[in-house]
Length: 339
Image (spheres, rainbow, N blue to C red):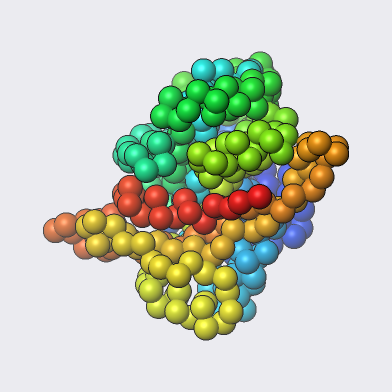
Protein backbone atom coordinates (compact mmCIF):
# COMPACT_ATOMS: atom_id res chain seq x y z
CA UNK A 1 0.00 0.00 0.00
CA UNK A 2 1.33 3.53 -0.76
CA UNK A 3 2.53 5.67 2.11
CA UNK A 4 -0.22 7.54 3.92
CA UNK A 5 -0.98 8.87 7.35
CA UNK A 6 -3.66 6.21 7.77
CA UNK A 7 -1.25 3.44 6.87
CA UNK A 8 1.34 4.83 9.26
CA UNK A 9 -1.27 4.68 12.05
CA UNK A 10 -2.08 1.08 11.20
CA UNK A 11 1.61 0.13 11.04
CA UNK A 12 1.88 1.28 14.66
CA UNK A 13 -1.19 -0.62 15.85
CA UNK A 14 -1.73 -3.80 13.83
CA UNK A 15 0.14 -7.07 13.57
CA UNK A 16 1.83 -8.16 10.37
CA UNK A 17 -0.99 -10.64 9.74
CA UNK A 18 -3.63 -7.93 10.13
CA UNK A 19 -1.73 -5.58 7.83
CA UNK A 20 -1.70 -8.33 5.21
CA UNK A 21 -5.50 -8.34 5.36
CA UNK A 22 -5.59 -4.56 5.03
CA UNK A 23 -3.43 -4.86 1.92
CA UNK A 24 -6.18 -6.93 0.32
CA UNK A 25 -8.56 -3.95 0.41
CA UNK A 26 -9.01 -1.68 -2.59
CA UNK A 27 -7.88 1.89 -1.96
CA UNK A 28 -10.28 4.80 -2.43
CA UNK A 29 -9.92 6.69 -5.68
CA UNK A 30 -9.66 9.97 -3.80
CA UNK A 31 -6.22 11.10 -2.57
CA UNK A 32 -5.99 9.56 0.88
CA UNK A 33 -2.51 8.26 0.06
CA UNK A 34 -0.72 11.58 0.46
CA UNK A 35 2.78 11.64 1.95
CA UNK A 36 3.06 11.59 5.72
CA UNK A 37 2.25 14.92 7.33
CA UNK A 38 1.91 16.19 10.87
CA UNK A 39 -1.89 16.12 10.75
CA UNK A 40 -4.36 13.31 10.07
CA UNK A 41 -7.58 14.26 8.31
CA UNK A 42 -10.94 12.84 9.32
CA UNK A 43 -11.05 10.86 6.08
CA UNK A 44 -7.67 9.28 6.74
CA UNK A 45 -8.67 8.35 10.27
CA UNK A 46 -12.04 6.96 9.15
CA UNK A 47 -10.34 4.88 6.47
CA UNK A 48 -7.79 3.52 8.94
CA UNK A 49 -10.53 2.64 11.43
CA UNK A 50 -12.64 0.79 8.87
CA UNK A 51 -9.63 -1.09 7.54
CA UNK A 52 -8.67 -2.17 11.06
CA UNK A 53 -12.23 -3.31 11.73
CA UNK A 54 -12.21 -5.31 8.52
CA UNK A 55 -8.98 -7.04 9.50
CA UNK A 56 -10.34 -7.83 12.97
CA UNK A 57 -13.52 -9.36 11.54
CA UNK A 58 -11.64 -11.43 8.97
CA UNK A 59 -9.43 -12.84 11.71
CA UNK A 60 -12.44 -13.84 13.82
CA UNK A 61 -14.66 -15.31 11.06
CA UNK A 62 -13.08 -18.39 9.43
CA UNK A 63 -15.26 -18.23 6.29
CA UNK A 64 -14.33 -14.57 5.86
CA UNK A 65 -10.64 -15.42 6.13
CA UNK A 66 -11.10 -18.21 3.62
CA UNK A 67 -12.77 -15.76 1.23
CA UNK A 68 -10.00 -13.17 1.65
CA UNK A 69 -7.40 -15.83 0.90
CA UNK A 70 -9.42 -16.83 -2.18
CA UNK A 71 -9.36 -13.22 -3.40
CA UNK A 72 -5.62 -13.02 -2.77
CA UNK A 73 -4.99 -16.18 -4.79
CA UNK A 74 -7.05 -14.69 -7.63
CA UNK A 75 -5.13 -11.42 -7.49
CA UNK A 76 -8.32 -9.52 -6.70
CA UNK A 77 -8.84 -6.70 -4.24
CA UNK A 78 -11.83 -6.49 -1.90
CA UNK A 79 -13.94 -3.33 -2.02
CA UNK A 80 -15.12 -2.73 1.53
CA UNK A 81 -18.67 -1.47 1.03
CA UNK A 82 -20.04 -1.29 4.57
CA UNK A 83 -19.94 -2.68 8.07
CA UNK A 84 -22.79 -3.17 10.52
CA UNK A 85 -23.26 -2.58 14.24
CA UNK A 86 -26.21 -3.38 16.51
CA UNK A 87 -27.35 -1.16 19.39
CA UNK A 88 -30.26 -0.97 21.85
CA UNK A 89 -32.31 2.13 22.63
CA UNK A 90 -32.64 1.08 26.25
CA UNK A 91 -33.79 3.15 29.21
CA UNK A 92 -30.25 2.89 30.54
CA UNK A 93 -27.05 1.39 29.21
CA UNK A 94 -24.94 2.21 32.24
CA UNK A 95 -22.09 4.53 31.31
CA UNK A 96 -22.60 3.87 27.59
CA UNK A 97 -24.90 6.17 25.58
CA UNK A 98 -28.14 4.43 24.71
CA UNK A 99 -28.93 3.31 21.18
CA UNK A 100 -27.05 4.36 18.08
CA UNK A 101 -25.45 7.29 19.94
CA UNK A 102 -22.89 4.80 21.27
CA UNK A 103 -21.57 4.62 17.70
CA UNK A 104 -22.64 7.86 16.02
CA UNK A 105 -20.73 9.91 18.60
CA UNK A 106 -17.58 8.69 16.83
CA UNK A 107 -18.95 8.46 13.28
CA UNK A 108 -20.09 12.08 13.08
CA UNK A 109 -16.71 13.60 14.07
CA UNK A 110 -15.05 11.24 11.58
CA UNK A 111 -17.06 12.84 8.76
CA UNK A 112 -20.01 10.47 8.46
CA UNK A 113 -23.50 11.78 7.73
CA UNK A 114 -26.92 10.17 7.98
CA UNK A 115 -27.85 8.91 4.51
CA UNK A 116 -31.01 6.88 5.12
CA UNK A 117 -33.41 5.48 7.70
CA UNK A 118 -34.72 1.93 7.28
CA UNK A 119 -37.60 0.70 9.46
CA UNK A 120 -37.28 -2.97 10.41
CA UNK A 121 -40.71 -3.59 11.98
CA UNK A 122 -40.52 -7.39 11.95
CA UNK A 123 -37.43 -7.13 14.13
CA UNK A 124 -38.71 -4.18 16.19
CA UNK A 125 -35.63 -2.27 15.11
CA UNK A 126 -34.60 0.72 13.01
CA UNK A 127 -31.58 0.73 10.75
CA UNK A 128 -29.70 3.88 9.77
CA UNK A 129 -27.03 4.23 7.11
CA UNK A 130 -24.08 6.56 7.64
CA UNK A 131 -21.98 7.48 4.63
CA UNK A 132 -18.69 9.36 4.58
CA UNK A 133 -19.01 12.91 3.28
CA UNK A 134 -15.48 13.01 1.85
CA UNK A 135 -15.69 9.81 -0.22
CA UNK A 136 -19.10 8.07 -0.17
CA UNK A 137 -18.02 5.18 -2.39
CA UNK A 138 -14.43 4.78 -1.23
CA UNK A 139 -14.73 4.77 2.57
CA UNK A 140 -16.92 2.01 3.99
CA UNK A 141 -20.42 2.96 5.11
CA UNK A 142 -21.93 1.96 8.45
CA UNK A 143 -25.34 0.36 8.88
CA UNK A 144 -26.22 1.04 12.52
CA UNK A 145 -29.31 -0.74 13.82
CA UNK A 146 -31.21 0.13 16.97
CA UNK A 147 -33.51 -2.27 18.83
CA UNK A 148 -36.64 -0.80 20.47
CA UNK A 149 -37.33 -2.57 23.80
CA UNK A 150 -40.82 -1.07 24.18
CA UNK A 151 -42.03 -3.43 21.48
CA UNK A 152 -41.37 -6.46 23.71
CA UNK A 153 -42.81 -7.87 26.92
CA UNK A 154 -42.24 -6.31 30.34
CA UNK A 155 -40.15 -9.32 31.41
CA UNK A 156 -37.98 -8.95 28.30
CA UNK A 157 -37.47 -5.25 29.03
CA UNK A 158 -36.51 -5.86 32.65
CA UNK A 159 -34.01 -8.52 31.61
CA UNK A 160 -32.57 -6.32 28.90
CA UNK A 161 -32.10 -3.42 31.32
CA UNK A 162 -30.40 -5.73 33.83
CA UNK A 163 -28.01 -7.07 31.21
CA UNK A 164 -27.10 -3.65 29.79
CA UNK A 165 -27.23 -1.68 33.03
CA UNK A 166 -23.56 -2.11 33.89
CA UNK A 167 -22.15 -1.13 30.49
CA UNK A 168 -18.93 0.83 30.55
CA UNK A 169 -17.81 3.65 28.29
CA UNK A 170 -14.65 2.70 26.36
CA UNK A 171 -13.87 6.38 25.65
CA UNK A 172 -11.91 8.51 28.11
CA UNK A 173 -12.32 12.25 28.68
CA UNK A 174 -9.28 12.82 26.47
CA UNK A 175 -10.87 10.73 23.71
CA UNK A 176 -14.03 12.84 23.89
CA UNK A 177 -11.95 16.01 23.67
CA UNK A 178 -10.10 14.68 20.62
CA UNK A 179 -13.38 13.82 18.92
CA UNK A 180 -14.69 17.33 19.55
CA UNK A 181 -11.52 18.77 18.04
CA UNK A 182 -11.84 16.47 15.05
CA UNK A 183 -15.46 17.46 14.46
CA UNK A 184 -14.59 21.16 14.66
CA UNK A 185 -11.32 21.17 12.71
CA UNK A 186 -11.60 18.13 10.42
CA UNK A 187 -8.12 16.92 11.37
CA UNK A 188 -5.95 16.02 14.36
CA UNK A 189 -2.23 16.08 15.15
CA UNK A 190 -0.72 12.73 14.24
CA UNK A 191 0.12 11.76 17.83
CA UNK A 192 -3.42 12.57 18.96
CA UNK A 193 -4.86 10.44 16.15
CA UNK A 194 -2.49 7.63 17.10
CA UNK A 195 -3.89 7.65 20.65
CA UNK A 196 -7.50 8.01 19.50
CA UNK A 197 -7.63 5.17 16.94
CA UNK A 198 -7.34 2.33 19.51
CA UNK A 199 -10.10 3.98 21.55
CA UNK A 200 -12.34 4.12 18.48
CA UNK A 201 -11.74 0.42 17.87
CA UNK A 202 -12.65 -0.35 21.49
CA UNK A 203 -16.13 1.03 20.79
CA UNK A 204 -16.82 -1.97 18.56
CA UNK A 205 -17.06 -4.55 21.32
CA UNK A 206 -19.35 -5.74 24.08
CA UNK A 207 -19.29 -3.17 26.88
CA UNK A 208 -21.47 -5.04 29.41
CA UNK A 209 -20.91 -8.29 31.35
CA UNK A 210 -22.07 -11.52 29.75
CA UNK A 211 -25.68 -12.47 30.53
CA UNK A 212 -26.54 -15.58 32.48
CA UNK A 213 -27.86 -18.56 30.55
CA UNK A 214 -31.37 -17.87 31.86
CA UNK A 215 -31.18 -14.24 30.75
CA UNK A 216 -29.88 -15.22 27.32
CA UNK A 217 -32.64 -17.78 26.82
CA UNK A 218 -35.34 -15.33 27.90
CA UNK A 219 -34.10 -12.70 25.45
CA UNK A 220 -33.79 -15.29 22.70
CA UNK A 221 -37.44 -16.27 23.06
CA UNK A 222 -38.50 -12.84 21.81
CA UNK A 223 -35.55 -11.54 19.81
CA UNK A 224 -32.63 -13.39 18.24
CA UNK A 225 -31.12 -9.98 17.59
CA UNK A 226 -31.19 -8.96 21.26
CA UNK A 227 -29.80 -12.34 22.25
CA UNK A 228 -26.89 -11.70 19.88
CA UNK A 229 -26.36 -8.23 21.32
CA UNK A 230 -26.38 -9.65 24.85
CA UNK A 231 -23.26 -11.71 24.12
CA UNK A 232 -21.56 -9.65 21.39
CA UNK A 233 -22.61 -6.05 22.10
CA UNK A 234 -21.38 -3.52 19.53
CA UNK A 235 -18.95 -5.97 17.98
CA UNK A 236 -18.65 -5.46 14.22
CA UNK A 237 -21.59 -7.60 13.11
CA UNK A 238 -20.44 -8.02 9.52
CA UNK A 239 -18.25 -6.58 6.81
CA UNK A 240 -19.19 -6.53 3.14
CA UNK A 241 -17.38 -6.93 -0.16
CA UNK A 242 -18.89 -4.90 -3.03
CA UNK A 243 -18.79 -7.16 -6.09
CA UNK A 244 -20.00 -6.89 -9.67
CA UNK A 245 -22.48 -9.78 -9.58
CA UNK A 246 -23.65 -11.28 -6.30
CA UNK A 247 -25.68 -14.00 -8.03
CA UNK A 248 -22.68 -15.24 -9.99
CA UNK A 249 -20.38 -15.06 -6.98
CA UNK A 250 -22.87 -16.88 -4.74
CA UNK A 251 -23.07 -19.75 -7.24
CA UNK A 252 -19.27 -19.96 -7.41
CA UNK A 253 -18.83 -19.94 -3.64
CA UNK A 254 -21.56 -22.54 -3.15
CA UNK A 255 -19.83 -24.80 -5.68
CA UNK A 256 -16.56 -24.34 -3.77
CA UNK A 257 -18.17 -25.44 -0.52
CA UNK A 258 -18.54 -22.08 1.21
CA UNK A 259 -21.33 -21.93 3.79
CA UNK A 260 -23.35 -19.29 1.97
CA UNK A 261 -26.92 -18.11 2.44
CA UNK A 262 -29.45 -20.00 0.32
CA UNK A 263 -31.16 -16.87 -1.00
CA UNK A 264 -29.92 -13.61 -2.49
CA UNK A 265 -31.81 -10.61 -1.12
CA UNK A 266 -32.96 -8.16 -3.83
CA UNK A 267 -34.04 -4.59 -3.03
CA UNK A 268 -37.45 -3.28 -4.10
CA UNK A 269 -35.69 -1.19 -6.76
CA UNK A 270 -33.73 -4.21 -8.01
CA UNK A 271 -30.48 -2.22 -7.85
CA UNK A 272 -29.10 -3.65 -4.60
CA UNK A 273 -28.49 -7.37 -4.14
CA UNK A 274 -27.03 -8.98 -1.04
CA UNK A 275 -26.10 -12.37 0.37
CA UNK A 276 -23.78 -13.60 3.08
CA UNK A 277 -21.69 -16.40 4.47
CA UNK A 278 -22.98 -18.14 7.57
CA UNK A 279 -22.03 -16.58 10.89
CA UNK A 280 -18.99 -17.84 12.73
CA UNK A 281 -19.52 -19.85 15.90
CA UNK A 282 -18.11 -18.37 19.09
CA UNK A 283 -17.91 -19.82 22.58
CA UNK A 284 -19.25 -17.74 25.45
CA UNK A 285 -19.25 -18.72 29.14
CA UNK A 286 -22.80 -18.18 30.40
CA UNK A 287 -23.61 -18.64 34.07
CA UNK A 288 -26.00 -21.55 34.69
CA UNK A 289 -27.24 -23.44 37.74
CA UNK A 290 -23.99 -25.42 37.85
CA UNK A 291 -21.69 -22.46 37.29
CA UNK A 292 -20.40 -20.93 34.06
CA UNK A 293 -20.47 -23.23 31.03
CA UNK A 294 -19.28 -22.64 27.49
CA UNK A 295 -22.01 -22.35 24.87
CA UNK A 296 -21.51 -22.25 21.13
CA UNK A 297 -23.31 -19.17 19.83
CA UNK A 298 -23.38 -17.14 16.62
CA UNK A 299 -20.72 -14.50 16.12
CA UNK A 300 -20.09 -12.18 13.19
CA UNK A 301 -20.27 -12.97 9.49
CA UNK A 302 -19.22 -11.78 6.02
CA UNK A 303 -21.50 -10.34 3.37
CA UNK A 304 -21.53 -9.52 -0.35
CA UNK A 305 -23.36 -6.74 -2.16
CA UNK A 306 -23.86 -5.65 -5.76
CA UNK A 307 -24.93 -2.06 -6.43
CA UNK A 308 -26.47 -0.91 -9.67
CA UNK A 309 -26.99 2.67 -10.81
CA UNK A 310 -29.68 4.95 -9.44
CA UNK A 311 -32.66 5.51 -11.77
CA UNK A 312 -31.58 7.54 -14.77
CA UNK A 313 -27.91 7.30 -13.85
CA UNK A 314 -24.91 5.24 -14.85
CA UNK A 315 -22.06 3.50 -13.08
CA UNK A 316 -19.79 4.27 -11.36
CA UNK A 317 -20.70 7.91 -10.71
CA UNK A 318 -24.37 7.24 -9.93
CA UNK A 319 -23.99 4.04 -7.95
CA UNK A 320 -26.97 3.40 -5.69
CA UNK A 321 -25.40 3.48 -2.24
CA UNK A 322 -28.71 3.00 -0.43
CA UNK A 323 -29.92 -0.01 1.54
CA UNK A 324 -33.27 -1.79 1.64
CA UNK A 325 -35.38 -2.73 4.68
CA UNK A 326 -36.37 -6.08 3.19
CA UNK A 327 -32.79 -6.97 2.37
CA UNK A 328 -31.62 -5.99 5.84
CA UNK A 329 -34.32 -8.07 7.54
CA UNK A 330 -33.25 -11.12 5.53
CA UNK A 331 -29.57 -10.59 6.28
CA UNK A 332 -30.27 -10.28 10.02
CA UNK A 333 -31.29 -13.93 10.04
CA UNK A 334 -27.65 -14.92 9.61
CA UNK A 335 -27.13 -14.71 13.38
CA UNK A 336 -30.29 -16.50 14.52
CA UNK A 337 -29.77 -19.46 16.85
CA UNK A 338 -31.20 -21.43 19.75
CA UNK A 339 -29.67 -22.84 22.91
